[in-house]
Image (cartoon, rainbow, N blue to C red; front, side, top):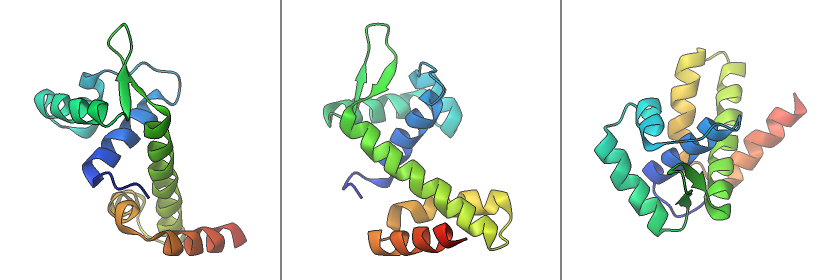
Length: 122
């Protein structure tokens, strides 16, 4: 997993999810999805831009760079797998989604791969 902080990972994952269906992403969309203030999102976008993880196109829409997309896809994969795993264990869907969001950032690669292997056996 990347050394980027949890909040940065959440922003990248949100951009990835919002853009999955070809939608153009703006800061206001991110603020709305995460229920954050627009100024907070602007500060975060500046930092992600400086780290080379996002770019802004000519129309002002936010796009992930190659590195940003790799991190976002990894976080999203972890989130989806962990959510589904918890749900398969009988955890309420909403609680599973919330817990997966916390777990995705701290779980070691070894533990994640073990969970993935056990899920693939099902």
